[in-house]
Image 1 (cartoon, rainbow, N blue to C red):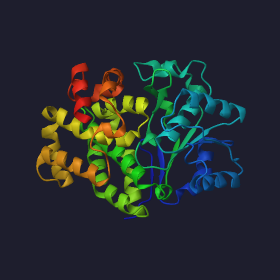
Image 2 (cartoon, rainbow, N blue to C red):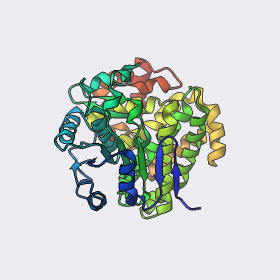
Image 3 (tube, helix red, strand yellow):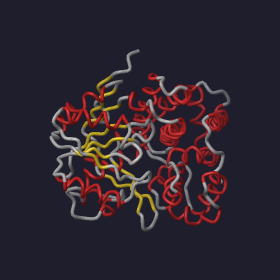
Image 4 (spheres, rainbow, N blue to C red):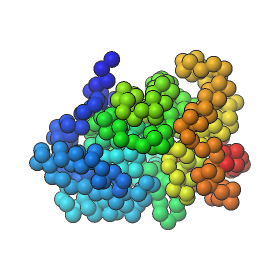
Length: 381
């Protein structure tokens, strides 16, 4: 099978090894003549980023980059990015990197023409309608990890540096105009990032599949996404140069983010405040929370996961799936408890407070209240 494609669902996606070379063409499609590449500090000086800037420069599109992006980007990073965008008189954003670079880049494009503070556009009710849609700059997304799927998302997660809460900022026009998914860009990921981002994609699929909301298209995508992670994440982890495994994981990441239109749940409701308070890696945190959440949701999801177990080739139905999840975590060096990530029992009341207001709560198949969340955090410690 040739792992190359041109897809228009959920947006235009140029998928395949080496397709970063089509970046200038993507800029023309998006109407960009002077783009700003937004990425994180860790990627800024790496060859993968510098070669991408070479492509832009060779095409007469400049070589502008903003990289003051933290692992859990906040409104201060955003303000600095918007200032850089305006100072450079740019006309679009290339969001480049993992979840932090993609999320922050999308928000720079979103906020560069707004007059209200970013928190006014949090994913609450119809707050997104407050934005001036015509002032949102065009966006091209180029993922360099296979996990968050932010490249095909209509929202970004930004941490409030004052309250230490992660907030989801949503607008339909935040969905990138063009996405370039080039698995060659992920070859250099270290093992722990390969594991954490891959399990983030898996968590998206698991939670979308678990969500009680009706969305059969997402349900099917989530199921196949789980299969791809099961088949190819161990291979990508064992051999980072396995381009087939890298490509299939990049597909799984985009599929997970597409599927969770159906809803997320307790895994993300817990992970977001943990990341905000303890600055943990998001995907790794999801993975640590997953076994406890699966057990908690068992009364509502056990039957549907019998079908998933059959499709995934896992014996033992739901119990077999739970056992497999823990085995997968262990094989990828994921800690067995949140305490190994630095989370303390004393912090649980604050974490519960953050989880209760997280939009992910709404997609959990079992109601998440203060008592249930407190118990979940304790179980995951």
